[in-house]
Length: 301
View 1 (tube, one colour):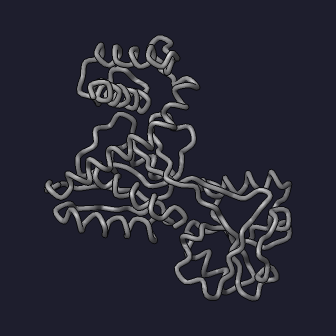
View 2 (cartoon, one colour):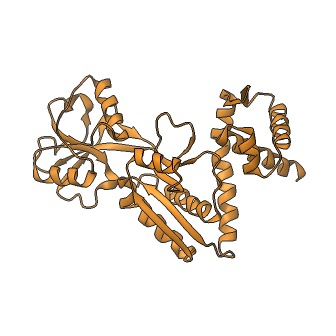
View 3 (spheres, rainbow, N blue to C red):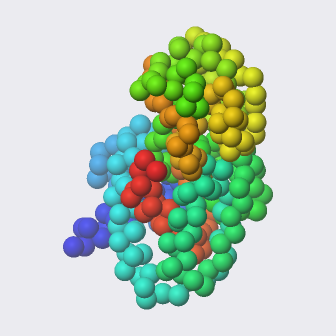
């Protein structure tokens, strides 16, 4: 029993250091001295027989073994946390305000569902949700204007921690009279001559699509760019244009056709985003757990 407790403590310290990549901040997050945390990490590395971190001066980097351990340990530790919090939730009255930034896709279904379930358990908490682009979410996090984001992995922001939730497939959406409406699937190369409406190129989703277009060696005919998904969907309904979006944004698709794309299949990974090492209130931790729980129960959403 003592061994199990020690192992859990070691893994808590390991997760804290992996999240912050800074011994001082990891020690503060773990409420221990820096020497204690360093000693515990060293014990874990000795027990496993591998180095989990590379230390160059003040710089700390996860080794390949560390990355593997983090990937395997995170789901297990999450299950332990959720089980513990679930037991405590009914006995605790959690108060406070949660500030969330979410992209449009998540604000349609995921965020309302999570907020509704969360408020049933914690009616004393105030939730403020802002619908923002991915770039706006990263900026507001750095400015401490929101507590966490529900978005996609940012590029070149090592000061932000990203926790993936699930993989999401982007699909072709056309009107019922479109030439491709009867297809069960379509290859990316077949979109060469298809007139399309897409998000502008500063959106991460568009960047993912452009990478897929380049891989298929095509240049689609993007005749309309809109910075919001719902107007794109309405345009598809009323014209011969096609678009590529997450099926999550389609609230009524009776007059639309949704077609999987292959060779390559455009994929994106939504997740939780927050500033590394930033203290999280009890209310925020509970809400993040609710998002994780909902994502696990609705992996395809």
